[in-house]
Amino acid sequence: MSALDVVATLEAQEGRGDELVAVLQASLATVRAEDGCLRYDLHRVRRRPDEVVMVERWASVDALKAHGAAEHFQRTSAQLADLLAAPPVVRVLEAVDVADPA
Image (cartoon, rainbow, N blue to C red; front, side, top):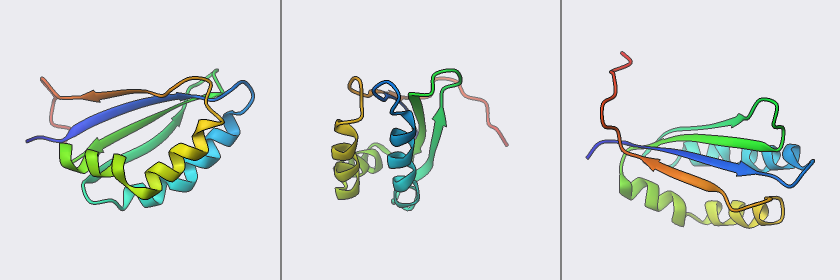
């Protein structure tokens, strides 16, 4: 099975974007060290300081499931609960036709 890409959009309550970024930044190194994590990058949406996008790549469905079940992921999710304006929008993508970047 091929790798999976994930795009997760999170929107903080108005004016709390910096707090959202801080919580997510604190977890980056831990997540990047997980088995099967190929990419885990945090982006802020230009001109929307309270909105961020996580761009992720996982080696397999099992790796993605393990990430969602990880204790540190659950802890971060709990921290985010009071910051978010709405539930995260998470899209798991399966490549149909992707050029080799090499």
